Length: 352
Image 1 (tube, helix red, strand yellow):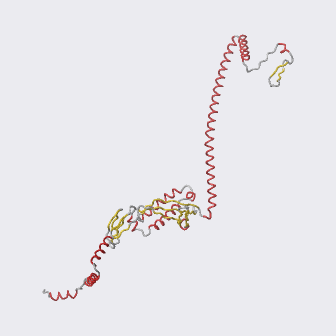
Image 2 (cartoon, rainbow, N blue to C red):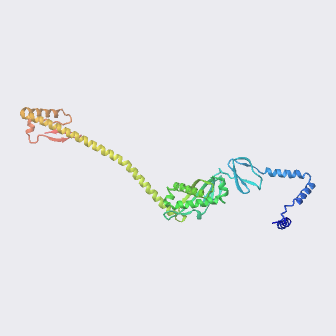
Image 3 (cartoon, one colour):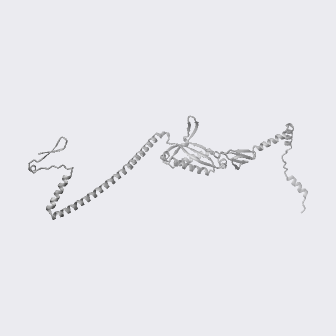
């Protein structure tokens, strides 16, 4: 088959759109006119280009990192020190302070601080601070959250308002933790546990958001019942403190009296045991002595009787603590042989 190349070429020319490039002739003419009107125009243009190139020099402070964006997209992170990026609008840099501890207040706002008089004015925000406890009581919780940047890329590009994100997440975490505790724990001994649980839960929430934020601390500033019933709660708390004080005093008295009583009991038991042993041994000795005397008495009654009499008289006369009175036979035979009387000094005296 023969092709008509001339007709084919004509068809291509008809179907082809002619795309013309930009006409730089007018722009070149304007530049030429500018050079002709302004002396040293080329030098000024060169200086402008140089200044544009020098605008890419930037310095990152020691507490910052540089986050470079190329055409709006994240490109790289630069450490502290002098650096260079392609001039705007090709590249731009942000320098967030990654070591600075930032603070969010929930339940109150600080209005002003007077460092001289140490007078600080606050504004309460009850819609943030009033929370429901696990035992269905309302408690007013005011706390602060301290945080810092952990990942600058996530911090700058994943969340639009970091401070509001932290505040909303902290309020949600605190409400959940308070809802798992009763009011007595929130007002008294459970504050440290509540702080730690809230910090852990808040960090989990922010990590799920890929926020690039690290929670440094959660600190409870003031936890109290609503102002309408705070007096009644104070009375209840005072009664509980009195109860604990009385229990501690009773335990202290018990711990003091029980050891003393046990010691006295042990002492009495030891004394009784010693007395028992001494009495038993003495009785056995008296029994043995009596049996031996009785045995001798059977053998020689008169001798044994006289010996016992003499031993008894000797024991009596040799004992200075016994008052001894010697009577004659005549006095013994009388009706009233002797009358015991006391003198003015209370000593005994004898008379017939």
